[in-house]
Image 1: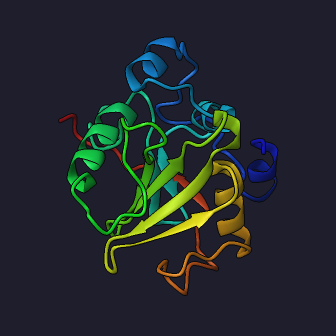
Image 2: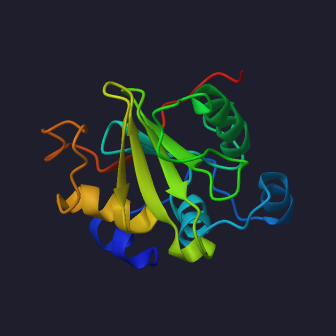
Length: 176
């Protein structure tokens, strides 16, 4: 879908931290794929921060390597590549899960890159149970659904809502 659904339920910050306006060509070439437009809009409008007090979306440029999209794609996919119980391949395999975020609990959020980027769904990997749960929606529709309670991943905290901050800028961090 588009970023508008998310903006309606989660106001973006007045001045986003580590917002990225492009260019996208080098990032997409490095990853070997285009990226969804709603993700590009998200990192431009929201930048880096914490969603619902426990979830972060990787951004293309960050002081922290733990937040940078390209470095986290490599680390997460290398960590999970040998998961024999995974029903999915991992990036860079064709159609392999491509991570875009993580939770404070160690869960990972992926795109399921099947079809054009704007049609990609979301897959949540639960660290505790090692299970995968797929959602037929875009990144920003997934986040909007979390904020409204319309989407409730099985292993996410039952008490996600209400929360004090649907989106907050990340606290200052040291460069690494």
